[in-house]
Image (cartoon, rainbow, N blue to C red):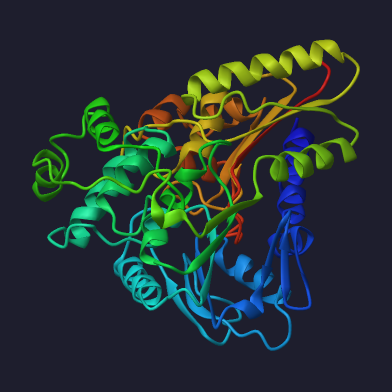
Length: 438
């Protein structure tokens, strides 16, 4: 069973290696002279006096590097880059900010101010490229109401992150309190032409949740915000200033489809679910493992997701009784924080499986492709049929650690935490279940 755990780790690492953002950008974008092509869209870069770049997200540096490598000789750009880390190789003309995640920091605020200042100077002769990836909501933030403080916004984010709401609901709330989300960056760009290239970590069809949708129409409403705050019992937890803005009836709506802000705006999804599933599926099959992909459990509670995926791999194993099998799942599971421990939804998912797979020839891995799992230093964790016995020998109670939201500590003590460091990518979480015949 240790071999299965090693296989799961290897499949994850091989998948990360295959997700190369600059390489994907070069496949999906190309220049012929000064003409940029993306799918059926064609843009003559020489038609604009100024070209600006705004990159936001955990993959911002990789996207900037990939985009810069496409530009023909003589084309110069300037702009702002907001990422969780400093760049390894800063590019001339770009202003960099190392911002906060999962809570915004002063640099998140300063990055937003720099982006707003940049966009306000854009006119009809300006082409603005937005390079967006996951994690951008907290990396760039500025309140719509100047009376709201950074501490107010950090308080809001903290409660949203821990309440168990799916990403699109969290971001519906964030958008309406923010000056830089929910289509408002497109509005700030005025008459400029804007093109957004996105690497998404949100479910298909919910692209407006990526970075809280700064450049596309917002389908959510103030009524949604009120419902979400009520549903997750946040009414009495938010700062008074935020509650007042929502309750006084003066909060403005975000720009909707048909708004003039999007007249010169285009949005292209460069990487999504398929760009994660395909390399993971290929990596597993390269090891001779019969493999299926399933994203049914996206946004499910961890216990329900764990039960379903374990049932599916059992079915797959019964259908192939003489072979090793693997089940690949992506997306985010819901894991409300119930204690003061260290960990995130990925390690919590694996911990919820420990007792279920005890004694079985099976391994379960769950990890974030960004290398970050909640408030832990790990990407996630891996367990197999021997994990429960090893934990009991070390006097570790799996259920106690689960109750205290302390899954990272549990797996760190067993040397089963997966630590990659920030990967510079952020597609989605990846779950890998591997099983052998009994």
